[in-house]
Length: 270
Image (cartoon, rainbow, N blue to C red; front, side, top):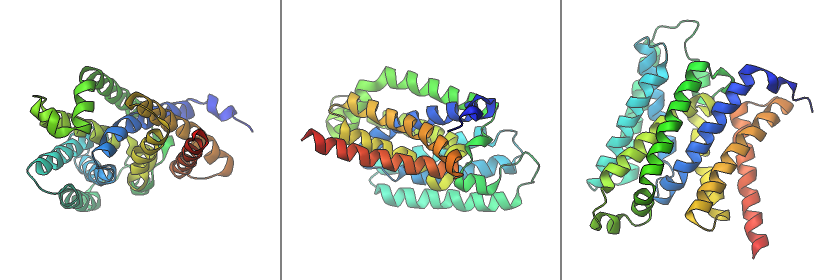
């Protein structure tokens, strides 16, 4: 198998950005799915579509920089409505449908240039479109995520698995949830380049599910989930070029295979 194309900067940049985003989504996916919010990634990707369309409408040189705060506000609004007693699925359906509808309108009105996002790439992703500016955004999000997770990991884990007791213990559950959702929104926006609106939720849910099957502790679950995410990107990228498949779709197929493999590993342990 010829892998010489991996020596080209465009492919190296795509793999680096994809691996970082996959690892971050796997980490956050473990925490989000434990809260019963597995569909949040899918909803946030729809909100991100609206944010990117807004950036294009405003003529921003990098629509991702507009989409990140836009999507973060949508995510924080979901958390606030959830804490007010509204069911999570109802809050997500309402806000994300509105965001997506606004995106459709703004995308129709946005001025098109040669450097404009391709609507098809927004929906289905194209990892090779990752530019240097996008990579810097991804690296910045990664640094912020790692710093926040290291500083608040114990409290975040406590609030994730026993929210009521954590609140009674004096932990600011609302603030932690808002920070977590804001980070997730930023990473989902970055992942739009990789997998598009349609497939990005798979990067959040599938590695986390594989980690929960194989891992025997929270640290083990996170470690296995992040490993599955990164391996899925690397193998999926190679498979995509070998079989001439779209990269995002190939990565999701490989992630699904890794999930099946984790089930088999668990059965062998018994």
